[in-house]
Image 1 (cartoon, rainbow, N blue to C red):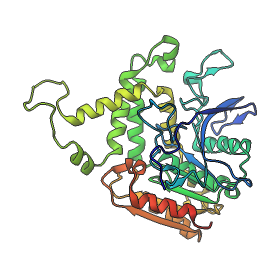
Image 2 (image 1 turned 90 degrees about the horizontal axis):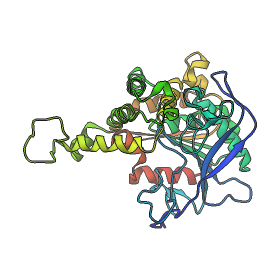
Image 3 (image 1 turned 135 degrees about the vertical axis):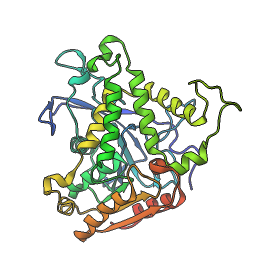
Image 4 (image 1 turned 180 degrees about the horizontal axis):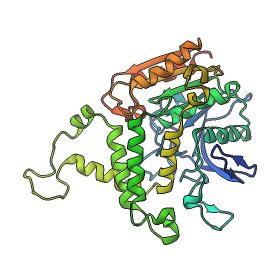
Length: 374
């Protein structure tokens, strides 16, 4: 049965890697750190390990709290814990902060050993493939030769897909939620507007804002506000906010009047306080570059041919950023290869953010898939 406190108090860990990592951009990281958290216990034959891959603005803190005073648990706390869909009584769960992140893994805010200054804009471009290769090294260091499952939503789902292609013998199940085999032109456009907002901020200083003791807060707030709109649905926004005002009468100025304005400004401000601008640029570019079919003559079925995992692909009806049509492209490519795949499309008004929500059908499907024989 689920427990109210989930996994309880947790502690982040950091693993240092001295082995250089050659990146797809032709640069090399001579050494790097990966921050990660684990929940549950690894069994004797290391067969119960599950990797959680985070989305664009996520990190390794997927569940639990760092102290009893923490008001907010990890980003997927409703799904991870004793008796929950990803049951920590059964599974050993690992979530790492992606390279280039700002949650403790080596990234633009880290010190560049060659200069003793923050990497800033000199940090190399990273890709989904680079993340997966670094995660594979983390798995080896933890004594995990094969994942029971690799699970991710949005950009995390792209990582799960990449795992199934790159390391087919090291993953038994892949859960791809609210994702796509590559970004649409519209999605790339949204990302470019967000990046332009950040880079146009006078306090960006060509990416060297840390050396100027500055934060490009205006640009980062705008980027987050724009992104957050795309994560919601029209129906969901109407149901939650409508045209509700904070006061009965119009004030005829540019102050916050509508509840949706207040919500977006809050989201933007809180994001500035926890996220690094250069990391946001890197993460959105990694989204743009992801396209496993490109190396296979733009044939997604051919790209997925090496995969041997069993798949669960989940989409949400109101998600227009990563629509169900994009998930069905993945399903069709898998079926063309006679792969084992289950597809679930869930009615929801939550938009793209539905993958984070405790929707009962979604949770039952995830739990059943993980428990079923591979």
